[in-house]
Length: 357
Image 1: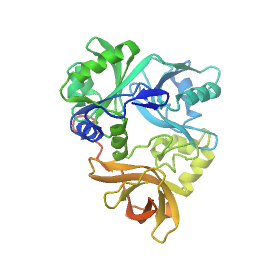
Image 2 (image 1 turned 45 degrees about the vertical axis):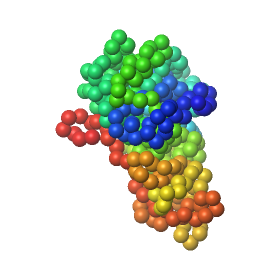
Image 3 (image 1 turned 90 degrees about the vertical axis):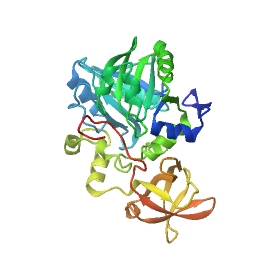
């Protein structure tokens, strides 16, 4: 157990990080992510709430359909990322659910309280827990208790009965695998965890495997791969900027972000494949083959599914092309590596029958 975002959280369970990682890729892993911040933005109607949040995020929220969820980023005035967050639209008019990172939630809430207009308010759900069930067996496991879960598609959600527990179930997650994030009232969270862990295909998973799974999936960890100085264009997550928003702007930091979209950023988050077996950790310097410093590793480790070290980091855009040879400075030695496409392990999201994964 370690301290994380003000909580005591497990690094690993008896299975160990490597086996937990592989179990999630092969069957189903259960993660307690109740440290995440859950809240709702409330306006007179959907357009009011959506217009308010759109002043602070570059995502297309006004056209977000009922039962749909979208990843976006909370921006500062300079176009830097304060947090990455999920925004979803329930059936109740004028409400938008948000889920923010645990380490950022108090700052996020204060920022939203200060920036949202008077007629729109933030309501926190500090009395809800959040579990993530991830892996190729996740749907079969959850459907035993809530058959309708099997019909959900990637980035959709619904309120479902899981046995006698009422929960909000979203199809998605942070591992690259098919799976669900399940929001429950506090008093039901432990009961639900025990119910799911009774299934022989489910094992509890700690922070160690959560990190290696998201790294293989090419997903950012806030505070490492994203921070207030990095824009969504530099972070290589420009898909979070809606088409209409690119045309209209109207969000904080838009001047910088629209300029970077038009002209290209000076640096870019890229995948990196070190040669050999030695992993490059966060903070390792990235150099060109002629010894010039061109960037830094922001996340790195061994990828159990990839069967090799994997990393991501920022490099000058001149060196960001896939296949570019670079050197990583690890313990004072220059280790050869290549700029690579992400993810390092294929995504397996469920998008509906006949649509493939």
